[in-house]
Length: 251
Image (cartoon, rainbow, N blue to C red; front, top):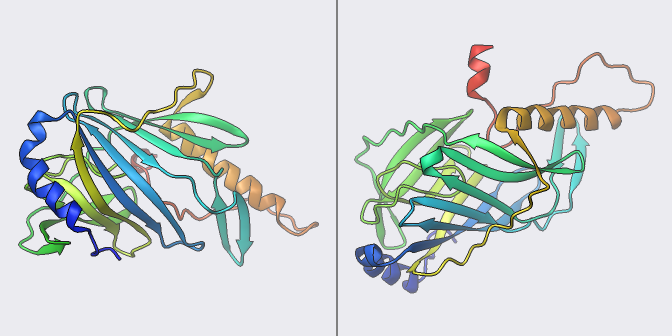
């Protein structure tokens, strides 16, 4: 499925990349597949503002019901079923997105990560009929492989990925647990993704979000333990896209 990119996609990329200076926006649609304990497929849309060098990544709502389950020593958490928006503002070095924790929605402020890509690879791969170059990345506990198109010089990608010398058409972690693959690329002068603004949402730092997230996971797991079982501490394993964090290296 990942290689079945339509002829329209190929024509648009080949022609529109040469005309991108005449357009204000680039819109890339991705298939997003989470090969996790509960398989989950979504659609992602990356919209890049070419004039302001900013981007929004929109992720459709999950088809899975929110909640949690415990099987053996593995706990699976499914967040609130809602659309997700991730806004990248380059001049402020800021990534912002919303998450639902403990029955409350938060606006997370994360610094644009300094991604140290390894690009000295001779290996190439056809994504559809587009010849892509290989790049590798170690980021927050996972190793990723990316395939990018140097003929489309846009240094954005899905999710938090950025700073390659070409548009990322495919990226996955080495275990294939998390996967993003481009389906179409269109250039235009009109934005199609509008980020909803809710001034009542509480803003927190990314570090505070991580603390809240895993505190919630531990509390939920404690609540699901059999009655009468005493525990002093519960260590909830990290299975998300990010499992290690830069501030932990200094603690």
